[in-house]
Image (cartoon, rainbow, N blue to C red; front, top):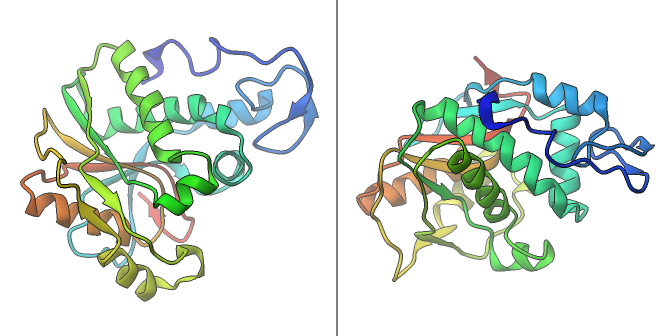
Length: 233
């Protein structure tokens, strides 16, 4: 979806030198937080189907921008763990491309981001995926899409998935989400789950099963990165 007006032309940091989010090089003229080389690597990525092997039951078709490596990995880490909230705009624009590749056309589409736990949101000064979703939705709307964003789920306290193996992730995911009492199960057009990284697929499959039971079956999942041990087809 490169017809969105360019990912990098509308906002350029030319005031003060800063570390590139992709390679940590310190230089002026960053393009939305990335040096020209890293920005070019990100622009060269194209969304492609991705699926963990084995895939958990209920996992919808997944599309990822690229492997969890290089500037994409470092940019996500800078955004999520190092407080670089300004990266939500370029990363959200990239996520919009993944949504477009997952469903095609120009909408309508319903976006459902996987929610952060309250603890994670406090640590990150806000729900990191909600910020990405807002920018992705704005980018899609600017391109003529009819976009609806829904938050039908709330995240329950759960252990950090980084320390868990595949079985542990699956067990934690089963109890990780609940439908909101006031959550709407209505949707316009295809329903697309949004997440930042695809690893085992346990989280997305758990969310998909809950929504399916509520009458809001996801058609696809759009993620920015898939871990390298997951095969990008």
